[in-house]
Image (tube, rainbow, N blue to C red; front, top):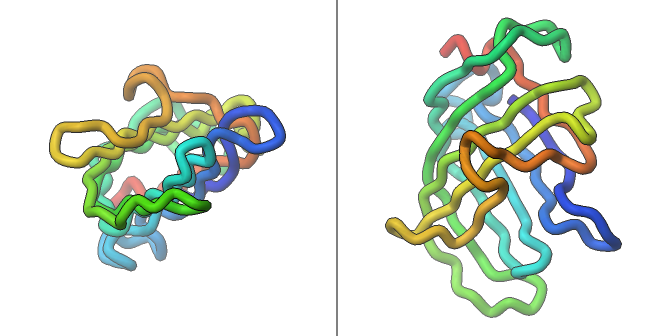
Length: 149
């Protein structure tokens, strides 16, 4: 899965996101990928550094042609303060879901992310796995090879 773009409207979006899950068609490449989210309102940068795909599901799409459109993944990473936020860099865990609803995903593709320290949520996009947020710019693309490993 590859993706990048923003969520939220206005001069500065609420979130910017981007990265890859299972790059090079392998769960072993780059420890499963790298997923970045910047919370502009909170001055936080999340970086998922070790990623595991839990499942792939959903109806087939042609964006590109794949037999699934939803990828669920989890992992570990770090959360850091940026842009004047003095927060220390701390280790975190996360769960995520990306949904590829349309090629050129603006207004159609969806993202859920829950970043936690222990059992406490410290950054979240979307309400739940069942209620992800719709992206405002960019695209999310599921590649069949990400779901075959």
